[in-house]
Image 1 (cartoon, rainbow over the protein chains, first blue to last red):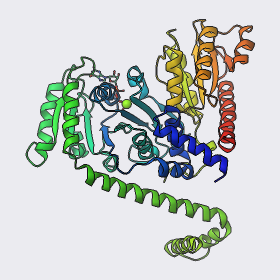
Image 2: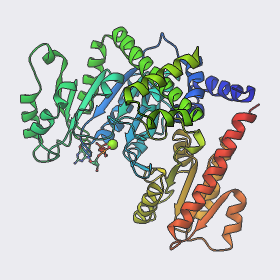
Image 3: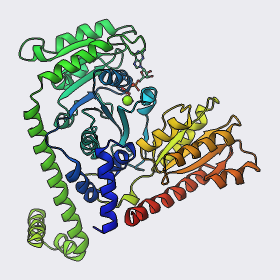
Image 4: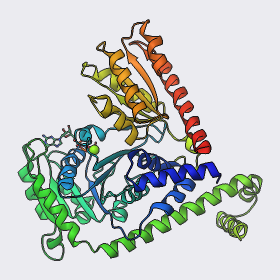
Amino acid sequence: MGKKEKSYLGTLERGIKKGERQSIARAITLAESDPASFSTIIKAVYDPKKYMHVVGVIGPPGCGKSSLIALLAPKLVENGHRVGIIAVDASSPFTGGSFLGNRIRMQDVLDNDKIFMRSMASRGAKGGLAMGVMNAALVLGSAGFDYVIVEPVGSGQADVDILDIASTIIVVLAPGLGDEVQAAKAGLMEIGDVFVVNKSDLPGAEKAERDLRYFVSTSPPNGERQKILSTSVRLKRGIEELLKATIVHETHVDKDAFKIRRLRLEASRIAKEIFSTKVDELAKEKEKWIADLSYTSIDPYSAAERIVYAVESRDR
Amino acid sequence: MVNGKNLKYSEKPIRVLIAKPGIDGHDRGVYVLARAFRDAGMEVIYPGLLPTPESIVDAAIDEDVDVIALSLLNGAHMAVFTKVMKTLNKKKVKDIAVVGGGIIPDEDKPKLEKIGVTGNYGPGTPLSVIIEHVKMRAFAVRNEKWGRKKRAT
Ligand SMILES: Nc1nc2c(ncn2[C@@H]2O[C@H](COP(=O)(O)OP(=O)(O)OP(=O)(O)O)[C@@H](O)[C@H]2O)c(=O)[nH]1
Ligand SMILES: [Mg+2]
């Protein structure tokens, strides 16, 4: 790394520690796109003593996730928190383009220096998240945001990847968006901590909530942990209860255990990334060699082992 | 595993904020533009109405976009676009490009260019022209970002 680049990253690092939005925003861009620079930044700003509570808000498309986050975030701020929001939309697998529309529902509450919102495209990542999500959360945590809300791509499936980064999962459902039986089948009932039937102003909401109670286990051990409530963004109803349920769940999370788990998962994810970068580099460096490997009579496993061996011996 | 992993920063999708700084009832035109940008491989952020220059600039900073596309059909473009540029300057933001669109009389165009708002396309401009222009501005600011990264003091 050049001297100038180092000093630029230094500027970003100081900015992040001071909570400056421009530095935070640029660091998140690097988190999405430039692993080498980003690793330098994280090493400088990450504080292992800090705990950042990550909340996942999941549910089918259009159930009101963004609208609820827009009401929840200011309430968390009133409770003394600083709130980061990362909302993911899918990238087109064909053009790589994406329409990032979650900000529309939140724009009204973003004029607040204790709230930072970032839209992110999945860029081909699976599981409703994007590669940069956890990295962006690390930046926000280092900048003093102690609550980070993640909204994955809307999905009726239980995308369990969110469990790796969030310790409180809010599952949002809405009447008329596919029935609760389907949600139960898809496994959403198993991964949630707080279940919200949103749009309670619409017909069918009561029935939806009643049905939901059949599928969400209300008996211990889950019963103590899982909570069902109903909200209406339109009527601003149930938001206080949602806040309370979120905070109560947070206090029940074994933070040290979760931190260790998250660190372990992150570290192995990053290690895989580093290794796969090396394989790609090797492929570029030794294009002919790799091509030969696959075109001669060798089987794919033996070819892969040779590549692994080549990467390992190059590092030595 | 992941699209475009390990690509250089400058090869990542262009991020563009479509900003509508006033109520002028032309949501549909904005959607057409958003879709065209998306289909051209860009990441398009459309936050709805952004009533003040501050809200536009703040959104652009937080989203770290390459380009702000300002769209205004109600004739207030001179005043509003100028305010956006002033706010960007006040916040010392130099690496976000601003392009404009609307019903802009020819005599206003050089004035807007001078303060840094380029394009200034009217209704009926082929989308491909607008896309090419946004790409051109985006790559220019990205070069600057890279340059600054190398040249930072
Ligand atoms: N009637 C009613 N409409 C609501 C309520 N909450 C949200 N909506 C509307 O539902 C639509 C979708 O809301 P969003 O907040 O964008 O939903 P989302 O789950 O974030 O959607 P995706 O991000 O696209 O998956 C919007 O038109 C909202 O205005 C509610 O409580 N009642
Ligand atoms: Mg949403």
